[in-house]
Image 1 (cartoon, rainbow, N blue to C red):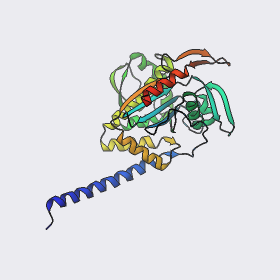
Image 2 (cartoon, helix red, strand yellow):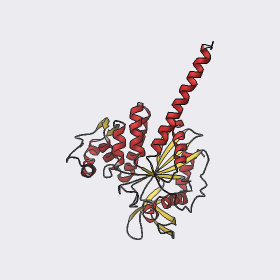
Image 3 (cartoon, one colour):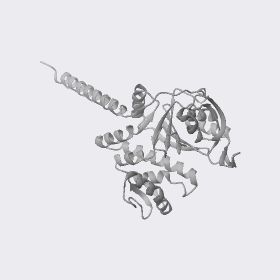
Image 4 (cartoon, rainbow, N blue to C red):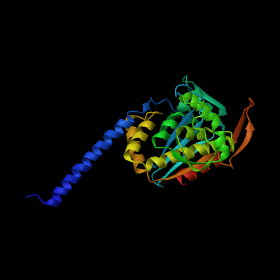
Length: 323
């Protein structure tokens, strides 16, 4: 006669094994939805800020709505996962920073010029943008994920909306970008407009996207990058506390809109890393910070941010690598 305790543990092991297998099947299914592209040529991969404990993934967002168009990038956020400090740091790189764009262009030729950071993607796509950030700021950029701006509508809606603190001025300023979005989404004119702001307003995807794109309220692009990090943080927090069905909707909505240079196996490993990082503290910052830039004008008359590169490197080293 079998001992009841042994039988219980055998059944428990079988149940856990079945759950583990089903979870892995789901993960592979989600990963299969991601648009994976071949790795391009990199030339700057020897940054001194490079650790096996830190994984740096560049999130590239653009209004072009097509990764192949290679328009100027509107959002460049370095997502850094530090397994030692148990922290996830989102670092926005300002697009108007005047930097040395150095690497390989889209035609396979060497490029070495000075321009705004967001021009790097135009010249040579994601690889040149990663090279430019790595070369100028001495920080390793391991891989990238590209997402078009309209994707946030589906992603936010998949988690049932997010709560944001919105001022009356921001609510009014969100109307022009929402008017453009409504045309693209096929909505009626005036859909989702906010009459006023408020604390912890539950907003849908269309409204969250307009908030993240808002440039002309507050401190221009500086505050816009902060809004973008806020929206991403709120999405992560909402997904973490959601039920399994909502998480499934969120995973489908997210994965189906992503383009990356990571392989199926790398994405699988990253997914496991993300699962074990769910309780990590989420921090955010901006490069350059308030004390590390001045306004200037380029040789062709464009307004630029002249950067104190050494100060920026020191900030990255301190906040991401705890050095």
